[in-house]
Length: 452
Image 1 (tube, rainbow, N blue to C red):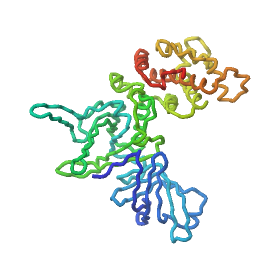
Image 2 (cartoon, helix red, strand yellow; image 1 turned 180 degrees about the vertical axis):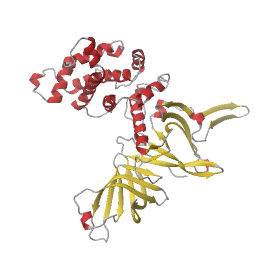
Image 3 (tube, rainbow, N blue to C red; image 1 turned 135 degrees about the vertical axis):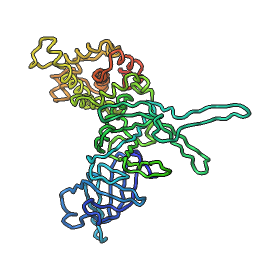
């Protein structure tokens, strides 16, 4: 069985590499993936070793590079930029390519190529957000005490599906549970791991690009739910035409997708604190399907607001005025897109008249006044307005005398983030009573201790 590769682990592959248009011109080289850094192919030679090509100031970008590793794996690299290192003491140059995407297990001509794919994705936080129950432990005490540990080893068993949601006419998003069992050498140290994973299935042919878009959308949803930036640690796709048979059973060949997602946590860095979640699966189980459908079918005009909220959840050692601006501008964007017209119509205000920021904040605070944490938020509206204009336009401070700095600014940004969170949750269909219940049950420091 082919090896599965993880996004959070360093990868080194040796083999021969060539362009799809020139398969006979194979060059030996080493491919290295360094998480959060780069995907680099170093060739002992080059596809075009002419001096004009090597010394050209123009950056050479190759759409697709194929490879065959020493383990027999098919490799595809996408969007590869060339840079060369000339050594006049050798008879060949070292030519390197830096790529954005790496596919291990199949040759394809582009990320838009369509095929019957499904994807299985590991996200470290998902097992904590929706704990698996794939292992059964029982104790029996007759003459001797015996512990029985049982689990189903059939991968992708339908019994392991926790919930399946059809988010559109061709896409289903599934959370399921599974077990890894490693008996180890001589069965001395067996290792059993149960986990929850994400599965994306399609009714029609799809592309790698569409699969990655669906995965990113779920990563954003889980980032909101856990109040932290989450990234996939493993993305495996299966092509229903790429398999082998054994004992009259089909075994599908795993195809690993590696891409430069940024902020990927290594295994040593993946320490999950469930007390920091906004909500978990059990909390929203009754609303999960409807919430997820709307999350995937969102109109484009909510996308930047949602993205700004997710970005604001990133924990940093140093915060700046930019972090404040990201949140306040998202609140303004939400108002202009979803509240301004209704507000003007209900108050007989001309559509040409601009709604001021202090009015926007006052109206949103009033809208969510039945949410307890908003009701006692104590937002300094005048200071927020002055700070927004000062940091956006850098007008003289004498014109914005209530501008905030340092911890005072960050403290107001925390309060604004809570308001933005209510706006987004409300947009995706949660009632104020549900939002209030979620916030009251949340113990995350990112939403608490607003005076610290």
